Length: 429
Image (cartoon, rainbow, N blue to C red; front, side, top):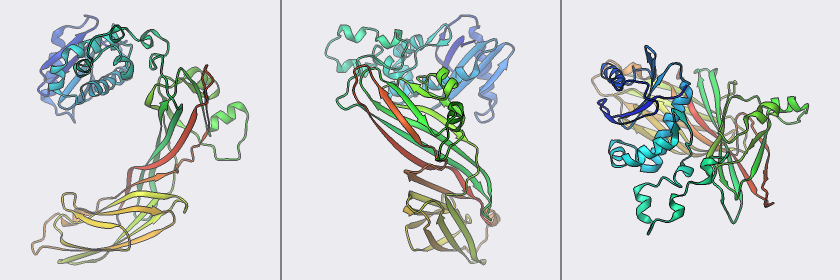
């Protein structure tokens, strides 16, 4: 089941505007959400809860609450996906989504709510298509006079491919594909990996004419098994795969082929997860060499544990220190170091960190004459940030990206790999 009504509330719980799609929920039902909001803080209030037979789903953004009330047993994930789509769409339309922009554009807001949902079911959520016939005031003022084409409903609305309008033309047809992976990792001070997880996404920027059909092949283990093929290279097992709506799910379920007609410009094609143990890409070891009542000295060693041909860019290492230190002094053979008193840590920045390289940094701090009680509570985890281009920690590879269009043009596919840090922490000894 879908949504019955959607409310927009300010930070006090006052209703700014609402759209009732079914008329099967009393207008006083929102008062129960307002009371719950006043009783609990945001961090304590659950994003979905049920009162009798009414389900409340809500998201917050810039001191605004968007609340969906649903009767019976709704598809909660569908409701939340739509609410987040609303936030992204209004941000695109109004530049900044807040109470003031909502009040200034309430007419367009109602138009969008009517087009995006019908009888509580999401219909059209692509920003590029909606902007073709629902124009903001800023866009209208740039037009010298209204033309018939300005008010015509684009064919994408009634087309099977609602995410891509007709008539797209480019002089140079190409598509850029980025395979981006984030590594979440927690390590003990002895080097043991306590937990590790790879979160990946495939981001596309499509600049292709017409209605091209694309087929993407990855080194997916299940795809090779289904087709009875073998590979000399590494095969990976993707988990929790989520696709953009343009992907043909039936074909993927049948033979693991990713076939789709892409939206125009930038979009996220898919996300995936790998719950696998990997060694730390950048290992940081911190030793406290001297610790007296007046002084503390550190030795920090950073080592890149990936292949020597790869280079990590913009590496940032955050090492915690006691909250009452002063007189920082640093010595390092590369990069720059600074003391961040607001975060109680030292910040070591290395612009380029080549694989298999090792760098050393020494630091010393003084202590004030009066000791604080929580001085010994500084031993938090070391945090590391980095970005490694042309490298994926999982070993994912794009085997092919075929582009087929009726006009017969040859599109150029470009592929790039990037590995970034996620929640990457190393505990101190």
